Amino acid sequence: MNNIVRTPNFIFYSILAIANIFAYSFIEPHFQLFDSALFKLQLIYPTQGWLPYKDFVFIYPFGPSLLSLFIDKLSFGAFNLITFVWPIHFLLQLVIVEQIRKIYSDQNIHTIVTILVIETLFIAKLGGEPFSVLLTFILCLEYFTTYQTKKITWKIFAYSILLCFVRWDRLVFCLGILFLYRAFCKIKGVDFEITHTAKLFLISLSAILLLISSFFIYGNENFYNVIQYVFFDPFIIAKFRSLPFKWDNNILSILNIYYFILLAYILVGCSLIKEKFNDRKVFFYFLGISLFIPTLSRSDVGHFLPFYISSLFLIYSLPSFFSRFYLKSKKLILSINGIFCFFIIFIFSFLITQSQVENTCNSFNDLKYGYKSIFVGNSQYDDFNINYLYLYLQNINLKPATKYISDEPGIQNNCDRAQEIIKDLDMAPKPSIFYLNKSILIDKNNVNQYNNCGLLEQYFSEKTKTIGHCEINQSQIEVRISYER
Image (cartoon, rainbow, N blue to C red; front, top):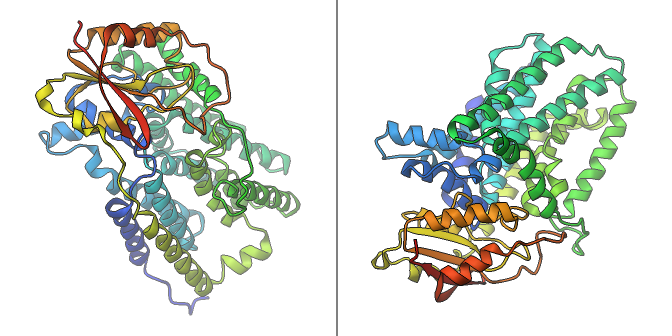
């Protein structure tokens, strides 16, 4: 083993850097009409003084918004966080690499780099917020490091704060992983160290309490609204956006991979139960399911891919026979990982050739019309359709007419929320332009019935008038305008 020439670390870091540059320069987000657009709005709106918005509370906490605002002020308006998304993403990856090196004593760095290259390309194609997946891994790995060193450092609290202010729900998943890991250790007769575990729980929970407390200051909200946004709305949305699990007729479909991964978890889990206890294998097994819960609320590609990424850590939990063959055959693994990374990049080179978003609504963007605010929604709320947030991004100079940027099921068709939105629309600067999606999704994003209040439809009918129609992503958009104050 000592005669094997170690590949210099800078080569692996260079590979990661190239992957991030490739993702930034060439990959077009698949979900740019909604998720990717919402993330960019989260970073741009605060620099224009347009905050707070509800979507940046119960969907995306305002951590990135505050950082973007800080960068904007520091650079005198020259930059915002969008400029530094991929450099920050790269730095978070380097943190993970260093954590893995501590756990494996500088071994198997090629494996984690391969995982992170795949993560980079998948996240870039997915679009949306790119930090929380890596922060989830970082916090979970820090949990495990504290068990090895028997020391709890400031890093636990720092990573908990960062993750909480980016995606608080994933901090909850981390705590769930911590509990499952310690419970398995207890079942296998390993010292539970309840005091140590309790400290970790309390440190991470304090981050959630800090986030909730900050809503009172940053969001200027009362206690009832804070509890509503943080604890109730996400579950209401998940309920109405749930999709049935289906088997695709194409056995190699990216959706069907989900079932093969679950089968792999069952098989690897059985081997971990039978084998002699190995704390590293067990931990990485549970780390792999850290992003499993979101797949239960919506069975679509967008919610599956983060779980696919976390499942790559199963490579560290393989049964002894495979781990000896895979993790210790360095030359073979370097070859396999290199071929695999090349194959992934080769696939993505085809994906990036797709055309730009079809959008005929740009003709209404002319500044000569003097619009001062914008609303992007749906013409009716009996069913859940997508409101294309891309249109907000295309009209970034216009102030959003309501605090609710995205149309979420169970929210806009609620009478209280509809009245709140109507109040916002009345108070918005006039004239206001309305982009209302009239198309019904063939593959609906919910299987539940709505109790629509009908107030928004009534408002559109009585206080706006149609000025034209356009099309985006093959969806018919009705364009309306309101002059009334």
